[in-house]
Length: 391
Image: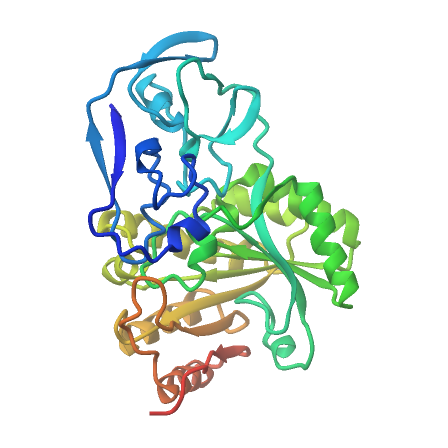
């Protein structure tokens, strides 16, 4: 059972990153450690891994959960629920996805990073979780993995995009870490509000595509499905609606609902083709990596076989410090044999970011080699990021 927890910061360098991106119940996670509730939202957001959680003894406090008063040691809502034997899924752990939302003293709040005190009242039943922390409503000149390559090569903007905060993975080299590991810089929006902003942005910039990326946008289906529905309603039948995802949270039923709601394009990143590589890239243990990888590959096959009208792009990260050229090519072979040549293949040159600033970017020639290999198999659409220089 969770007890009272606090964050230990003995190795903190004072870089200030956590105070910028983390929505901390105690205020500033750098200095308000005496008020720390132990939610742990700042732990994955520390680029130097200088934070850890430690259990400490504490006097219990009284809270009310679904009308029942009980004593708990935890000082954050998710911990109190666990002490009460209530299992609630909190996939992002940083307050971004609202999949774990409950009612706290009359307000809808994420259980994972909301503090509590003596007398707090929590309601877990019949909670409306259709909300999400979002930011970055803007036109995009290139798009994502699920954007057709013929649009990427055109001048100007290709789609309007927004970014969903929170992620279930903990990639050490996360390419969008302030979104994945923080919820302080976005706004909590309802599906209809977010769709209105995004479709309005698309109209303002004269594009007929909208996209949601992250972080990981699929963590809260109570938000994502009505968001797609509202984009379709506001944008009309010709609007292309694009979801970029890591694919780990999808199920066949979830995909069906998204397609029925109006999703027309999807891009799915495959973090590695072996559990070992997937674990290294995604920052999870190998048992979890094996399960997640299996799910991603099965979802790709499901979309390719059951939803042929949905545009499917597959993103493959590459950096020689994370995976090998041979493993990437084996994944390309699998895509070719299982999904067909119509699928778009995007090679992503993972650059030094977040906790892996020690990495060098992949060489330009390596990205060209991967692009040529995929084209040699007959893929109709192949795109390789080549932002690094020839060395």
